[in-house]
Amino acid sequence: MKIFVTVKQVPDTTGKVSVKADGTLDRASMETVTNPDDLNAVEAALQLKEQTGARVITVTMGPMQAESMLRELYAMGVDEAVLVSGREFGGSDTYATSQIIAAAIDTLGLEEGDIILSGRQAIDGDTAQVGPQIAEKLHLPQVSYAAEITMKDNRLTVKRMLEDGYMMVQVKTPCLITCVKELNEPRYMSVQGIEDCFDKEIRILAYDDLKDHPLIDKTTIGLAGSPTNIYKSFTPPQRSAGRMLSGSTADMAAETARILAEKHLI
Image 1 (cartoon, helix red, strand yellow):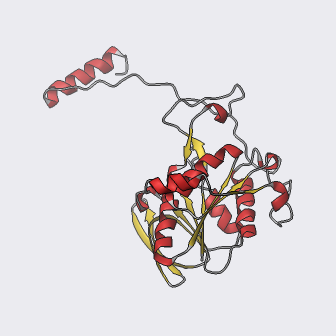
Image 2 (cartoon, helix red, strand yellow):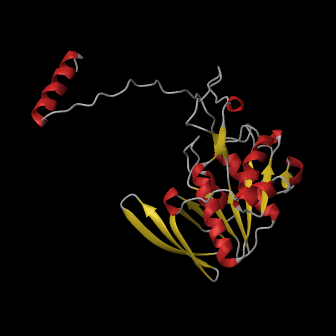
Image 3 (cartoon, helix red, strand yellow):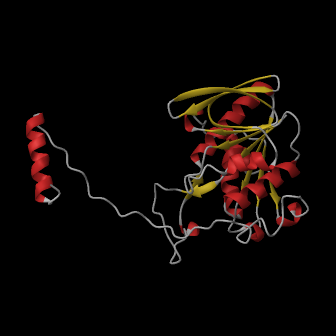
């Protein structure tokens, strides 16, 4: 049994976000981190590995710099790390990205009984589209927003988070599940894992390795194969610090009215 986990290296939004003159993110000048929701998916995979003895394989698409992220995931306990990288894949939107990652997972040997886990969404795009699109392109059942996962035989029971409650869903493998942060608390890298991660191989899948897959066509990948594109990215203006009021309810209400009147808002 294999558990594939899709991961993404994203800009660290707690730091300075740089934008190029054309309105796109200047990713090369920003610090990067593993997408937080994807870490919950990795943790869920590692817990299932401990329960079933499954092999955990992380798959990401991006530049060669993503190797640093994959080594951190090795240090957490994953068994294999795969980097899908090539100029032909550059500029891919969610549709094209899901084409490429679906082809990569299929090429790696998706079989009966396997599971694909992904984070709910990436913090740099917030679309929550890639995971479900991968499932559609591989013709797999999918369950999104998993807040709890249990497994018995080849069937998963998923507690799916909704806006106003939860839904319990059973699904057979192979399947794809997207994970929310409420699912678990990702573990830290182990000391032994950190020592060993630099000796482990990162498998590279380039365009030539995937070009013969039915999902890969230059009209459906990269910038040319992306139905959508980013018009502009920008850093929101910083707001001034708020002001805390104290005193009785009447005093605070009067002071609030005075401040609003002073600003000609009332």
